[in-house]
Image (cartoon, rainbow, N blue to C red; front, top):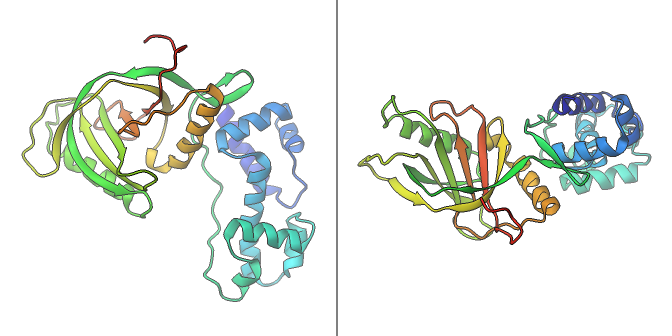
Length: 289
């Protein structure tokens, strides 16, 4: 069973039937699945319940109807199965922080968003709960040489900044160097959106330029996850996956200076599959590595 494909088709089905009284049972039946399993699968893969997702997509669809001006807010509420204008307005304001009437009065426009992408990653079943597949393992002590910089995840250019610095390093190393590369993230301060980043390779290379360093990453006990695609595009998915992993597996996050380690299989191909190492506490009943 291709779970990713089923959820992708479910998102299209929902988008095409937002005016209908969608339920977990009706959507699950469309794909000949148990409503209980479908609900767990959808929540694990999308990071929210099916009902929360349907509500968000109805509110998203409402944006175009509001700007159209051909329908009253009451008509829009009924068309998108909200029942009453009051319930529509309440949900809209809670989701977007502004009443739908304000948009028609000239408030800053809100752009509708396309159907979200289903991030591909493997899953496992733990006592009936579905969670992103993981392995409890040690990230072995490794010497990493690379370029260090800071990014602010609250700004719009952090993706470009990370990619540009990775290109700078690749331009300074021998093209014959092959193998894995590492992106190491550490938080500048608690609850901050600023991160220190080191993009490097497991080689003791000497580059005599500012911001190029060689560091020894200590052995860290971690949960390892496998992903496909750009970490910078799946950050929110990873965040919900990790929270779900902690809840279901009963593991605890570790207060390490390192927040996250991303390991690509091929330093020359950053579109390849990669591993995510997230530091966790080693509990007494964890198997020895």
